[in-house]
Amino acid sequence: MRDRLSKLIESLFSIFLIVAILGGGVVFLMYVTGIIAGGDFGNTLALNARNVMIPFFIRSAAIAILLGLVHHYVTGEHALTLDENE
Image (cartoon, rainbow, N blue to C red):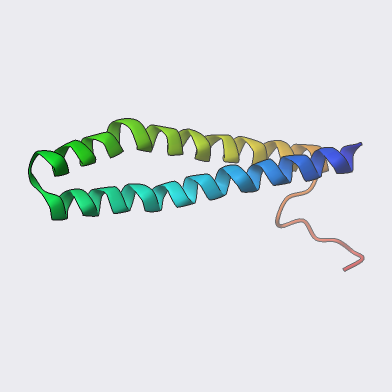
């Protein structure tokens, strides 16, 4: 049961982390497009990125961090744990 829960949490962590990282790229492209386009369209695009997109991706990153902490708690290990068998 603990192994299945660990795998599920790992999968969800990976999904939310990928969404957050790719979201940063999307926001970057929106800002660059807004700078290139300029004018009202560029302003609207940049404001849309700031007000709509960034909060969504910040929440995704926060959920990924929470899942990572839960994974450490469930497995009882962390990235720097040494195994005597290895």
